Length: 193
Image (tube, rainbow, N blue to C red; front, top):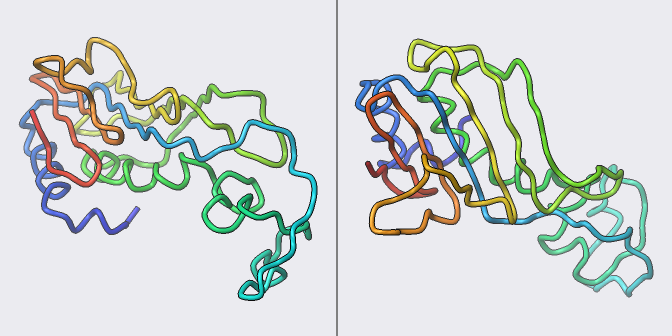
């Protein structure tokens, strides 16, 4: 995927540990972000004056014309809307998926199954769980599983994800479950066993 995290020491260490088989073949990867860059309400209505510093037509680009609404699209809230962003999965998933995907030598998924609120045509959900099916690689088991969680679904829970001394999982990260152990990779940090 080629994002900036790939150059960090922690991510490079995690990739080396996986490729060297430190925790054995990987049977599961859990990836998550607590962010809820979606919107589950009704379509926006109303209109606010466009600030002098903003060329609203230029900002809209190829998206359908709509009125400016203070704090609803710019700055940053565009991530929530179908015409501008791709929610937490598209915004954070690319960063958090990068190391597990790359280190395991995965190819594009052969199937995807998502659980979220009923889709609509204007906004992305605030919480999702997405399961991916990949062809096994030399570094995964044949029954390899990959699951993403975001919003209120994150961090995930379950026996694979219990840390020593009742420590909480980080708000964002990945957990590799291997035949010989597990490795936690908090987002923007080094791996932990």
